[in-house]
Image (cartoon, rainbow, N blue to C red; front, top):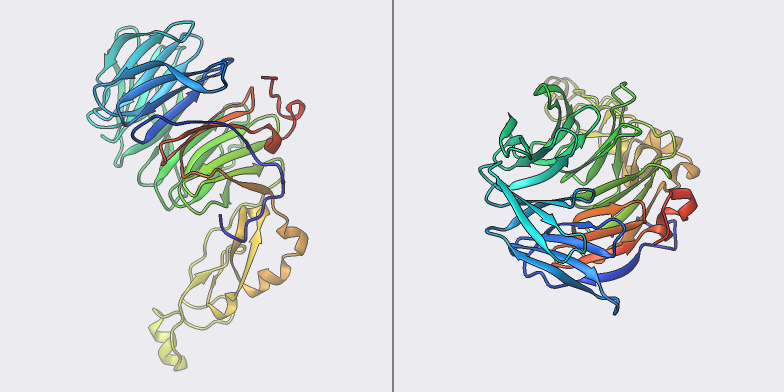
Length: 407
């Protein structure tokens, strides 16, 4: 992690166990609710169910080899259904036994023409919804196996969230956009633009109606869908692609993980400030010196053009001399130091720099994360092919505050 970021909490996540064994990248994992077990899918073409033995170690109770690398995974505990997306574009459905020692093949869905990036099962309409690198969102009937609907995008559809009540799907793509669609009418409701890089993960909170998006531009954006005011809040604390998000409703905290190995817990129980829109100008809005493309003013004033910068606090276009200072400003989501103009720097008080997030080291480059919020457990998959299970309760708060049940 960068030197300027410090954790407010001396108690970080507790590593409960490491699960080695996969020969290739582990693309997805999920904790089995109310069980000491985890399901993993990997590019080594294996789907595995790991159960905790009396020794305290996790051993595979199911080891199944797929026809092509596994790229996505979804487990529905109530029905014991497992959906595995593959590099070939197919989604394979399995039914797992109550003791998690046997798995039966159900059917294969020809959902995509190339790699499946996300799979979701909707038990209400009995749909399996998926996105793929073929630039399509598809939803298929689990009873008949037939295609119900399909929507095309201009870029790879990289991640997906779904709201059961409204049948809204949120699709992030490689261009950096998030598209909101209503699946029962196959209509595009809106397009959310704000990231400068591809969308790598999404998280939808149906209670507060918040949508969180993580991106390769290292930032997280909170889209206040329920507020219907178009409010967006940017969170910047990671130094690489954000690969996992989970919002804890009761404690109003956001947990994020990144390729930089960082595990961050953001305090969302505050009134944050929206980052300003960057203003455009032909000259510095502080000292009026021309920027290098302003040929007329440069000629009239016999001066050299300057490079344009932007103050992260007020959004004004400024030159380097008028924005020589750096400061953190957590209320606006800037947990590390960013460029601010000299005027804004003087207006920021010491208490304004108090961190509103805690940062912890995951000790591997995290490429996937998910949480069992009822127990305060988190599982991360790294580029080191390890699966790690963490106890997050020391970091996010006591069980009474967060609603975690005893394990």
